[in-house]
Image 1: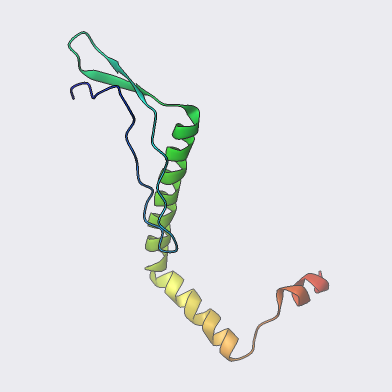
Image 2: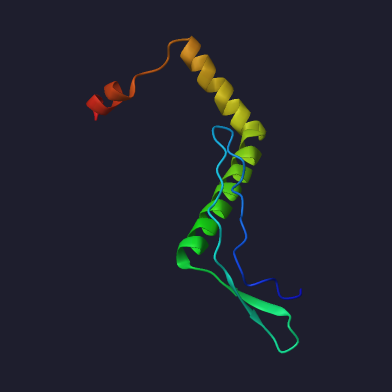
Length: 100
């Protein structure tokens, strides 16, 4: 990869959130290049780095949620929960808390 321009930063987009569409602020990166002009590393401000980690965590959580929600066991538990609600076999959280 050839060295990108040093002026300005690039923008990264957060994964699309169905409730709202968020964009990360521009990243103010710096590049380290070798003697041939090839980019070998990137230096990011810690704030930008943490934002990227947060975005990656959201993506991973979304993937895990999608996998879980498609599993037979999850569907079985949701179905049981709905049956319990319809049969009035539920308690309010406050009632359970008060019993403790």
